[in-house]
Image 1: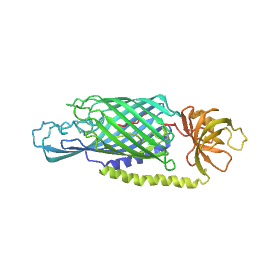
Image 2: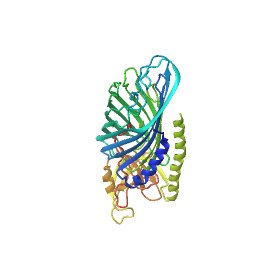
Image 3: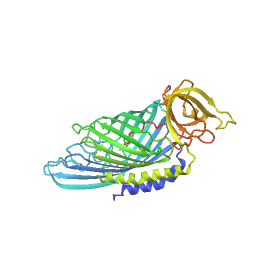
Image 4: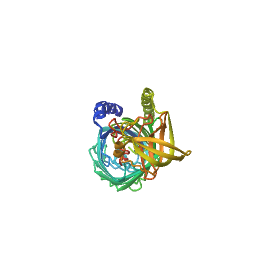
Length: 296
Length: 154
């Protein structure tokens, strides 16, 4: 499939949805996210992934979220001198939940083992990404109270093509908790989740725990800008691939139309090296939900 | 790293636009409050303004015995009773509160944000330009006070 620049798709989407969204989203928030992540997963495999995600969040105490993405994956592999195991099926999913492109450490995306790089093989595919459905229920706090605790369930519907290397082709589930505590000048937040990862063909993925914690500033510069920072981590899904940890920073504007920019840096080899998210949110509720915290 | 650079470029372009629009709006509202100050103290009187009062009828006013930064008594306009009820923010005599307030030439200050230390609740009632977060009918327009738990994306 011919590559469509993510930025062009994003602009087209915004042009289509913005006027309607701004008019009707009194009880929901619509966010368009453009994301990119790149990483060196070892054994000569570099993966660069771009997403264009349309996200809708509605509700407060009981909140529903839907994420639908277009995804583009570019892999660059250094083919090895040694014997390789044939197989065109790509293997993914050992990095982030359902992240396209990532493979078990030491394996090439074509299924072969590598012993010495001699040539670079590049490929790029673009198509529909996975569909994410999530529900969050307020357990305690919320509203004007300083704390809140929510429980949430997230389901990844494998709408991305496994054969094109855009997804694992398997259903994933995540259950977890998320909470926050508001101080006078900052809000701290964090969460813990358990992920049941479906197994793509030929690879058995273990169930993993993820954790994240961060802090948001109060709105700064005439209440127009919120600064954020966080750390996040995830257990290894394949033995010896290593746990993933990342550090993120972000900035988001406030108001009825909100812009956000995040950057994430992998702290371990199994996490994407660099990730960037740019987004725009429409709607007034839930306030400030748009582009804060881990998005990649 | 090209994504990083592109992201930074986008931010460099968009933030000034967003902030610039805000500045234009602020300039258009030249009658805004003049200074913002944070005080902490005890609620000694709560009253609701009646129709015919100089300020908005239905407005909740508290008198604070401030001990920080310096001892004094200040009357602070909070919000219409209905709007406060919709947010769930409660305040009673004897509660200890921290508040950022707009000081103006008028005899009463206006609350920007109030933290009720006795009840562990906090609400923002006006923007930094002093624009109330309720409509003319006294109905709350500020949205939920915080988002729910969808922090984790994909």
